[in-house]
Length: 197
Image (cartoon, rainbow, N blue to C red):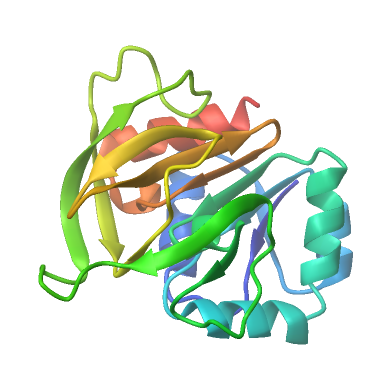
């Protein structure tokens, strides 16, 4: 069963709609017992990094989430869910991320237009299980003010005031900075590929 984590993120219904559209069975997970039953885990996210990490702690999900990732359960982090995979974020310096990937999430420059909102193209820089090669439909929908650095494990990047990680993948763990649930056919195709892991 796919477990979609509910910590109070505003895009939960949109993510559920996307999984409904591809015909996937899922359960909304709000506790460690739900995570334990999940054979795939999706962490959607919009909002504030610190709030998300505090809610995961309040719901006693952080440790269980890490244990399930180490156990090899396929994982997909969406937007803030990708950022949670890093050590931390400038948005909430006192809140630790999951620390799966090194580096800190940073804010876009105040000189540019923030948030980065709308459709933008991504570029494959390494073999990906989430994106096809060649990438025939490279446009996805973004909505974020903070970005993750392109580190080892980054398989696709995006350009907006510089290059940042659009997709990260390591073994069973993956994350996307854009919103596949709002990215039309290309987003639904990505979700289908996640289900094939």
